[in-house]
Length: 533
Ligand SMILES: *[C@@H]1O[C@H](CO)[C@@H](O)[C@H](O)[C@H]1NC(C)=O
Ligand SMILES: *[C@@H]1O[C@H](CO)[C@@H](O)[C@H](O)[C@H]1NC(C)=O
Ligand SMILES: *[C@@H]1O[C@H](CO)[C@@H](O)[C@H](O)[C@H]1NC(C)=O
Image 1 (cartoon, rainbow, N blue to C red):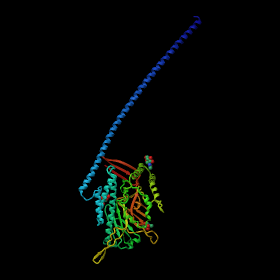
Image 2: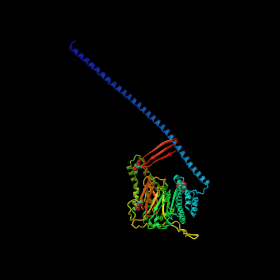
Image 3: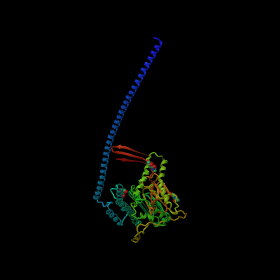
Image 4: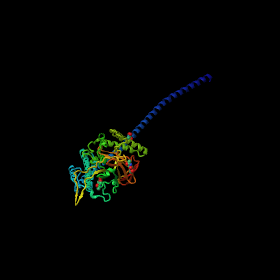
């Protein structure tokens, strides 16, 4: 073959190959497209299947959740129902219990009234009021009845839900409580007067004066009667009670009796303090501003003997939602402070500063008294400090005329007046210092004071405890006694910080058996264990 043909052939062949090649190329491109399409379709199908599966799973999950929720709801509902049942039966139990108590009271026929029935309680009070021949022992016996009546009413006030007693009943119960408290104190005054009339029959052979102590669980009655008026007997210690006093010279030479009447109950503070949980009465600062009782010349003890001016100013009157709101607010504040169990002491102090704020505001108000030369707050904030261990009524009393022996006869001048306060206003001693009464009190042994108690006197006009007028306080923790001086005779209480143990440091709840547990709260000074059954 000539070369040129060879070349042509070769060329043709090559071009043929090229042709075939390009055909093949075309072919594979198509196929690829097809394949890609198929793949895409497959993928789409797969994705769709996966989506459906996911949805199915999700649906399944939802259904499971739904079922679970339904189940929980049912069990919760059942629990709620059972709680409601329990609540109803508790209520029924309470009603039955009250009826049973009423019935038992009726059966016992012991002559004590039902304090919720106005006729009964009024009859009881007026019969007792008319009874003139009181002696201290008789009053002490009756006191137990009166305290139990008051307790019943306070319990009702605290425990009854708003639907169970009306506002009118609530007011009425509070009114009765105050009337009973007043009457009881009045009876102690009458009995004191009866005792003073015959004091000379019981004179002490050593001093020629008369003194005695009578006490029971709730009251300690101490009286000293200055029959001989000798300056060397100006002080006396009631050994059985641990209370004592030292009089200024002027008083030691007068016809005077000194009474220290300690009641474990507090019938002096506003009702909401006596019975924590009752709505709070608004303290009326305007009254305080208007009257500033320190300046009055007349014997300050006089007001003390009158006690509350009228039983018709009970805590009930001005109270309402306000008082409730306020205590609710302070509760919240407290619970904030208690919430953190690991607070250091400094933080504790910071917290008590926060709590102090409102009282400082109040005190700022009080200090605006005209001519107010006081720097420190004098009125006690009862949210901050609370009286513990009861109340000490310390009074100087006029001595009624004593019987004189004339031959075989005993003669006595009869006066119609009741118990009278000795009109004592502190004079100046020779050395220019104010003559003060010095009082020593033995602390009640049913009370623990974690710090030196604050000594405060009751200001009947301002209806508040005040710390002015009391000085030179010495606290003997070991001997459990406190000694202080005061310019006049006052009703005194020992107060302690209400938040002393707050915030608590830890708490624990231990199971102690079936349906039994031990709840332990560890606070700053005290550890409290409460058994729960
Ligand atoms: C003492 O007071 C309580 C409650 O205040 C009372 O239950 C108790 O009977 C009283 N006891 C006496 C002897 O008065
Ligand atoms: C009380 O706690 C709440 C929330 O726990 C907080 O918002 C509030 O500031 C706290 N108040 C005080 C007085 O600490
Ligand atoms: C304070 O009390 C002490 C004893 O308790 C007494 O010796 C002292 O004279 C008193 N001071 C004043 C100023 O009354």
